[in-house]
Image (cartoon, rainbow, N blue to C red):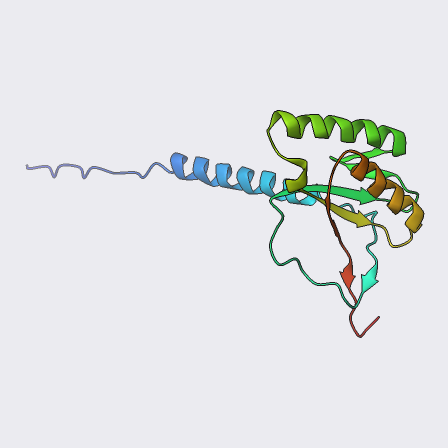
Length: 146
């Protein structure tokens, strides 16, 4: 009696594909976290009919978020004015080490609409004292429903 040889069973190893999928998920999670670090939910931007999206992203952005009480969120941490000046001094030193000219840095101000303008002006003056020159303000575009 002649026996039929058993057919070889081939299996596909899915491990590399699963590994790559998890790496892509981790990569996008990190990417999303970096973009959200520049925006804090506690800052309620003012509304303006003249607000428009930026034409192009700044080359060296430095995002400062000013809360209603005048405190500054910078690098994910909240600082009072004196502590903010110390952090800004460290940032200037970092730019010098990285050979970035301060006139190439754009300070992006996300000030709460309820923050007194005097406190925003004080933060701008602190930045100007450190020799920053370029500033951009963020606001929400006012629509007809408001």
